[in-house]
Length: 185
Image: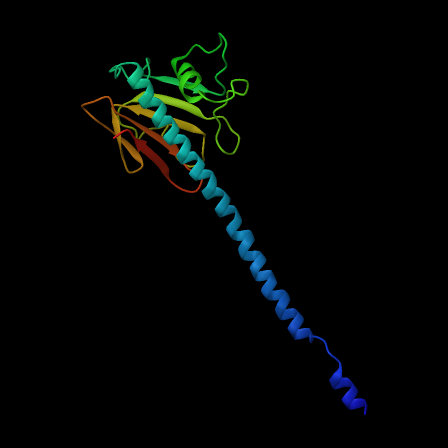
C-alpha cells in the first residue's frame, strides 16, 4: 500500500525543474543580448533622420540664398558646437544656420539640436572631398560631429569632390557601424 501512495503523489522531478530553468535562462540571455543591439539600431535610425533634416535645411538655405555658389553656408569653413542661443553670442554662420533652419518649429526656449543619446551635435563645414585619408574623418568612436562638405557628393562612406553644381554631402559616424553619407543628388 505504501508503494501505491508514493506513485499517486503529483509534482515535478528535479530534472524537470532544472530543464525549465535552463530554457528560461536561455530566453533571458537572448533578450539581454539582443536588446542593446536593438537600442543602438533605433538611435542610428534617429541619427539618419536627423541627417535628412540637415539635408532638407541645407536645401532650404540654398533656395533662400539663390543657390549660393560660395558654399552651403556663407563661410567655406565653419564649425559650431552646442546650442544655438537667440542672443548676441551666436555670431558664426554655422550657429546662425542651426538657429534659423535646424531649430525652426521647435520650442525656442529649449532651442536644441541633439543626438539621440543627449549629446549636442557639432557641425563641421568645409569644401571638397572628404574621406579616410583626411585626419579629421570620422574614424572609430562617435564624436557627434556632422561633417558637411560643399562641392562634393557621396561615394560609399566618403565624400568625393564634384566639379559642377552647388551640391553637398553630409557625413556622420553611426554608433552601430560605418559612416552614413547623404547628399542632395
